[in-house]
Image (cartoon, rainbow, N blue to C red):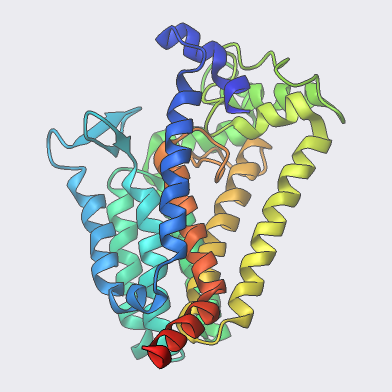
Length: 349
């Protein structure tokens, strides 16, 4: 799908129809190696270094503001440019936040206001750093993931309602604080009011999905990828899937995500330690929230945001990070087997 969605863009911009495929292929190889290493990792070490892991994620978000380090594109500073590779720290920060919240909630349930102060500050620091980029879409994703972590951590219902209301109110305030966000909201409500402006991308996404019908126009036969639909290889690749493979193709993709999410939840349920269970649920929440938001955007269900579709959208850093998280899920699932092997080694040595 990345080849189909990006071949024309790659030819026009870089003179190579395989440009994005080559980058994604290298990221896939590196990601699979990292996933294997993560699957062999001792989960207790992740718990032990929960705070340093969180700090690394926060520092990565902050150093993009150092001149010469952060890379600016489309009016936002969201990437770290290492010349050889460019990556988005927020992709890493989402998972480092999950790790630290899992560690905090494994020790103390967030059932009182006092027990929630530190977790709230932890989440707030991340959200502020992301909003300074600015990257409201990632902030919304982080807020939703954090809310899930608080709920599975044991937050009381009245506190959950209060935080959800505060989050929704804050989100509305942030939208009206910036003129471009108001334009995006208006374009979402009526994209045809600005067909060459803010509403252009959503309209092109509608054309892609609508022309796909039930079975699609055929693999590689997309018309919207010919520079009509911006970011067709990344944030809006689900539109190209809908155009080429139709409703059937979209349903198959969503079913695969459902199997992944259900497997992650099953791993969390059967975990014998609270930290492992919370960490598994946190990883699943990142995948599920980001998938839901991406699909909701391309189908016009929510205002446009810039979030890639996990595992599928072009983006090396995103793919690598999600594969590492999958490796951690595998490690949690096989922890009992690894522990039994360690015990056997001790007994026989």
